[in-house]
Length: 95
Image (cartoon, rainbow, N blue to C red; front, side, top):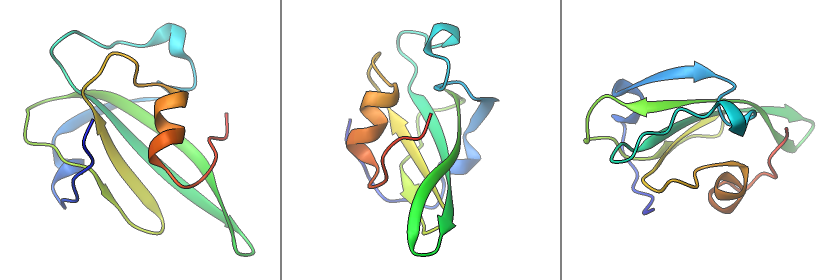
């Protein structure tokens, strides 16, 4: 999945809490992109993942966007999980 910066990503999703922490409860539907909201916490200068929300996009105009405090990632494959996230964020995934 390509990662494209945009400021509109957070407007086109409905997130369900802790979706990717529990892959067994994933609600991915073929043809829909997955959307992850990642929040960071800082301990000193160490950035860790604080929590992750995710859900299905409500339209197809969503692009990834990130700041120092959060990140929005969109994944169009059916393997959007912890492994996929770890490839697209600088911080190790914290489960």
